Image (cartoon, rainbow, N blue to C red; front, side, top):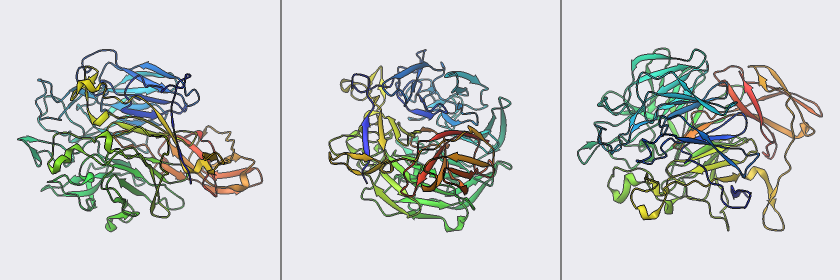
Length: 546
């Protein structure tokens, strides 16, 4: 089946440029995409004032809006979607690694305690209560009760270690943090991997996924006492980390040949289906992808689909699609950390090694399917700091990346100033195969006939019937919910697809049952899609759950 790429352009047909580098992005309940990055990976921009953010509306695709942003540098903050659809952002950058007042080793940026909320209705930012510990590169994940767990991250200038070992939980209803004093075993390799006399951390943004039993699964393997890596989950009640099994196969901490030993991989919770809602987590980015079944942890990691014809797809982003497949897009076959078979103090790959062909993992068939080659269209190379999000149209918005994974210094590349701006500001749209019905006489993909639905409700509770009206009710085979997501650094903690039980059907109406509880359907805004037997989705209907 064909797929299609297209460049986002302005009214004159020229590439539409983002006003800031989209290192961080989120799909809002309005259907718009907000993006931001503080200092935009520019060493000289850090101490400037007047940071900006951007807003792009798929319904007005030729325009992009520049918005204000907090004066705190949000570069490499953590974030997740709140139950009311706002975007919660924790931490950011206090100092770059090369600044004289940074006491840490190279590539140890320092964090801040500041927290912010982007309000989707007003399209404005506000301050939230500060955390107890500064964090840079933390992970935030929204939980079943609507609170936000924040884990890990670099500390502040006064903290000698690399990683913040205390977890904190933010309560949006109260506007307050719960201070968790329990220490967690280190996620990082600080003190174990040395580079030219300096400790070098390899892991950032631990890949967290909220599970039905109230625990949080971490696809980033934790260290145990003695330094061995294990796949573990966090109990929020006790603060304890339970060992579920070994780390992904082949992962060696003392030498970084494997993408899963660092933060260059992507992870996603696979579709949840009634009646049992089995929880499986996919990680991808290496020649082999792996799946962990949280319901049968003793089975450990098993290979997901076939071995691919490349050795590495570092910094690719996984995007859950309405048909339950997982799109793997962006990323490439080089990683500076491994250059010349000798570890370096850099991360990211080169543009020339970018992989232009998207892939989809089909969980029900346990196989990977390659997208078609772009033909006469050349996708933009996107590696480090690239992002991708599913839109209500069923297409995927793609943006961001630093050219050759390099930072800027004063608006031009720090490594080669004569090469110009390191930021990739153009946007693209990718249309998956489910939007097409073969190829037309002109050789171009032919749009598929899509089911039409009307959902009167914009808000639904748990375990309740929900009615959909459609002239195609008889041909609709599945109905799915996909949670609005935020994304950064090849990962989103928000992504969640839930298939709904079809409880009744008439000629023009479907009745489906919403998820039974908030542990399966984390509260928030979801896109509801109805799909035909061929997997062709309707346009998404925005629905608040919980």
